[in-house]
Structure formats: structure tokens, C-alpha cells
Amino acid sequence: MAVTVPAMPTPEGQTLQGWRSAFADQVGALNTDSLLIGHSVGAVFALRYLESCKIPIGAVFLVVFLVAGFTGTLGLSEYDALNASFVDGTFDWAAIERNAKKIFCISGGNDPYVQLSQGQEIARELGVEHHIIRGGGHLNAEYGYTRFPELLELCASVMT
Image (tube, rainbow, N blue to C red; front, top):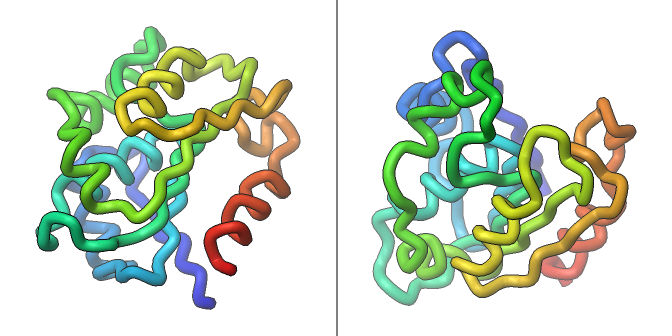
């Protein structure tokens, strides 16, 4: 399996359109064998990607992992300004569900940036389980997540 980690424009050029362009240039189209993993604003990007897919209704698309995702402002002015174009407007939850085979929603139980209620909202809107990693913080290197065994286990569970 090939793994692609696109270099997204951030903080300069961090807009939804900028990320869409970078993703299209570096990754291209995904298919039914794809796993899409988005962390933080990357999870918001994954939601926006899914709602904009132009595939037939009911088609099986890809498996998506939303890690430390959110759907609105964080109450942190520096990040809210960077994320504004990603969270502007409502989400088309029906389209997101329609374009994903399976969605996993994962949050750190003590994330200092993204309130747990944001992950709970995503899980509720999509009707999926909300996996909470106790003591995981923002699930990044700052909190010791240079490896993510829980995510690896979830990936393995859909690849078998």
C-alpha cells in the first residue's frame, strides 16, 4: 500500500481552496481502496472533501479517520483566523455519509485546542462511534504521538 503525506500550505496559504489545490496536485483522486486520515484542520478538510465529492449517491467510497476534528471556531484567535475558510458555513452531513464507506472519529480526552464536544458533534452528526483517547491531548508529537497504535489498529480492522 502506498502512503502519501501531502505538504499542505500552512500557515501561509492555509485556506480551504489552497488545500484543495495542493491535495489535487499531490494526491489526485482517491478510490475505494483509499484510507483518508485527517488530523485537526486536516480532519475538517477531510469532511469538506467528502461533502464535495461528485460520485453517484450510494456509491462506496473510502474509509476516513477524523483525528482531533472540529466543525467550528476553537476560541483561539490565532487558529480561528487560519481555519476560518474550513469551518465557514454548515456541513452537508448527508453527503459526507454518502461518500464514505466508514468513518472513524477520534479525539484526545484532554485536548487543549479542540473541545471534546466538537468531536462528539461530528460523531453524533455522522452516527459513528466516538473513540476517546484518555490523556491523548491533541494526539500529536507534543503529547507523545509520534506513533499512534490505536489508529494503526483501526486501520488494520478495515483492511482485512
